[in-house]
Image 1: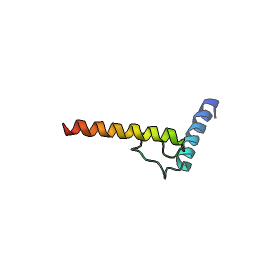
Image 2 (image 1 turned 135 degrees about the vertical axis):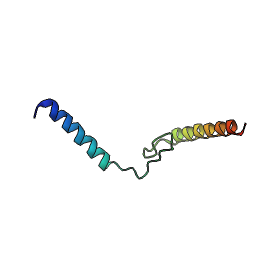
Image 3 (image 1 turned 90 degrees about the horizontal axis):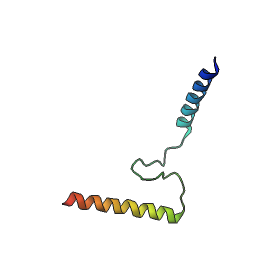
Image 4 (image 1 turned 90 degrees about the vertical axis):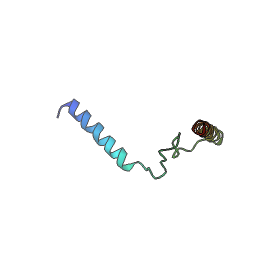
Length: 64
């Protein structure tokens, strides 16, 4: 195979391997951040606070 085809094939196999082996058991599609990554407590608190503010603002707009 040519070098270009080998590169394409290798990238495809790498993507398939990563998709199959990646653990998505803790994945939350509704979260604003990746819940599988352990963040420092201060950063996690800020993200949760920001998400709560966005939820509150959305509720206020929906109520009007």
